[in-house]
Length: 429
Image (cartoon, rainbow, N blue to C red; front, side, top):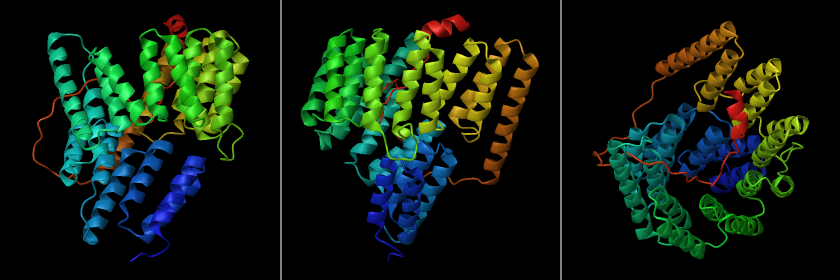
């Protein structure tokens, strides 16, 4: 029996509020859905994704929720949920880098539902993305094994769901990594034939043809994507970055502005909300590259107003201030950034390291040592807390013969992040 409102409606409201940028309200609705029906698995998955992706909370937070969901399903006498184990596996891999645990969880999901396209897709992406980068005979053999494992996952998904555009997209990107350009194009075309309005596929296809040097086709694909889905911020960002790289600065500014107008969320900020943060950040990088420092600072400020936890913005802004000789301001930005992320998160560890290296470049060895000590102290405290609250191991399954993976740049939503221009980085060295 339910202990409150309809959990499906509450979950739908939570997802809607998240999409509109009201993350606090979204969390409240999802918690209500779980309280109403403790065995409602989709609400757990949505809550974990909200907390770990948008709120940047640790994997431990998500792990506890998945374990709670597992327990409640058993209490209710319900079958295990393949989607729960798929999301749990993605959490272990993306947040913790624990490939072995993720494989066990993916295998559990497949045993529950062999037709689960999401499990096959994400398992394939993980295997393809986990290949080493070294260029030697042993590594090349491992890459081939990884690619074969990823291909097996994609083919398994397509066997049950032959028109799944995201699986076709991931398979196409795998083929680009293997150098099979013709196969990649055929798979991208199949994906668009299956779902012509899939903005993620259009973006990935555009990035691929751009890498081949066909900028006109890339521009056409991105423009088409913004027509079929005007609120897809990664598409606007990719298009703007393409024009930035082609040194079409005015066109890039116009694209970023149009993207912000179209993707703005009524989330209470003047900068358009979470979805627009990546566009402000990319626009700031553009102004940084063209030498308009004041405009770049303003764009970075707007990006953090839209998303206070946008790590790419913090990184770009600190580099700008360091390049301008404003070390004191760079320190203030680092200190502000460190407060936004949980201990031991990838973003925070990266920020600590960048902060330490900045002090070393400035010749402040004592300050650099202090930053290092602070980071180590925080990490040790976090590890001690985790040790006091051990988690149970994920469900054990029979051993699966898998090969270690290969690097794939497929992303769930097709996103990319702008980077500080290489010329600027070279000046720093």
